[in-house]
Image 1 (tube, rainbow, N blue to C red):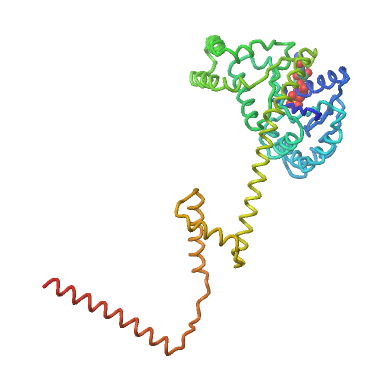
Image 2 (image 1 turned 90 degrees about the vertical axis):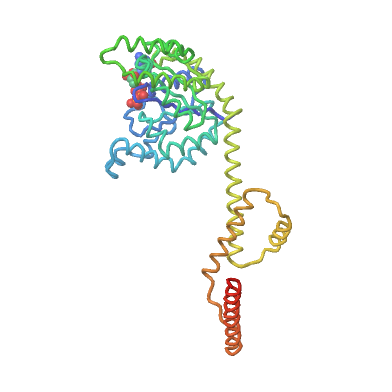
Length: 374
Ligand SMILES: Nc1nc2c(ncn2[C@@H]2O[C@H](COP(=O)(O)OP(=O)(O)OP(=O)(O)O)[C@@H](O)[C@H]2O)c(=O)[nH]1
């Protein structure tokens, strides 16, 4: 069975590294060691053993110096450089697939550098097209007790879900300091969330959120109801190890969900892309044949059959006709000037006859007009 890829994503300081360390030791204790990847090029120390570390391939400080970049630009550039080798990583994971049930991947603390960058998408898609891939979105529970911070975090998670289109688990970390029951309630009971909002406003009436902010958060919480229904939520403590068994059970469910829903969708997208590519090639080929002036026997017979039919089948029939007209117009513009094949004398004669015919018809018209007006 292909191993589950767990992409650990979270705001800076949410505890990704500590979570990775705990998950690693938890799986080791269960005699089910994971394959570990670090994708954070800026991290100074990784407190767990890595099978693949981006820092072995890219030197973050040299990238900063060499390209004259700031910290975030250097993270994005390092990821760009690393993503050029992603096919090799996938091959490597494929080779090791039989030995592991989980591949756990740490990402840079600056979420936007990973999620909204081209390299982040390339890495995520490459993994997701080969293995069941799950987004683990980590939240710093003690810092999410205010309704507005909670809402901002949820909106971020929502945007990541719709960007990656992969199964997601919301993990409330640091539950040894603050239990995550309040968050669970807010996600299932809209009225409880509203009550917390108004009490929060009441308690901080001097420096609290503005009325506009409150009404915005209220409408957003209604909008997010649909999003909450698709989520699996778990509370853990990376310090004590609480909640990790439950987390692993949810991972198993999500792998099933990936195989049933996401894989089918991925395959459909892939098929559609292949079909579009094949159509494009056929179109280009027929254009080339036309440009070279080669008569396509089949095409002309089928065109004749089509011409016999007066009706219009599909919208593309109109488009084709328009294209042909345009092409014909182009042809007259670009066509070389014809050389006269008549002898000069015969040509002069025809010209005179044409002129005479023109004059005659004008004379006749004037005579008719005068007769009428009389
Ligand atoms: N009490 C408690 N503290 C935690 C827990 N997990 C992490 N921390 C603390 O939270 C702080 C940040 O943890 P890190 O693991 O470095 O967070 P990070 O998300 O990797 O940070 P960046 O890589 O800088 O984004 C550290 O001081 C940790 O000791 C937890 O479960 N409980």
